[in-house]
Every structure is written in structure tokens, then in C-alpha cells.
Length: 63
Image (cartoon, rainbow, N blue to C red; front, side, top):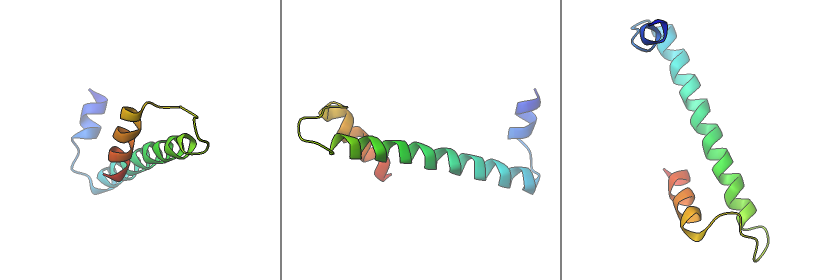
């Protein structure tokens, strides 16, 4: 119940905090995707992800 109150607040300071936390989380996810893509391209023949997974990560990283 406490989390629902925090997520449905109209207090501008709490909304700003939620915005920053969400932005940082997506920044980290995008950074991990970028590292995985660079690791995939580091050496020829090194397969960390399948071709389909690489294409999905590339698309998600760009959006």
C-alpha cells in the first residue's frame, strides 16, 4: 500500500525523484546493451549473443 501511494502521488518533488530514478535505470540498461554489443564486435568469431539477440539489442539501444 505504501508503494502505491508513492507511485500515485501528485507531489512535485516525489515525481521528480521518480523521474530521475527511472531515467538512471534506463541509462544503465542502455549502457549494458552498448557494452554487450561492443563485446560482440571485439573479435571476429566471438559469439556472446546470437544474431537475432544482437539485432534486438541494437534496436532497443537505439530507441
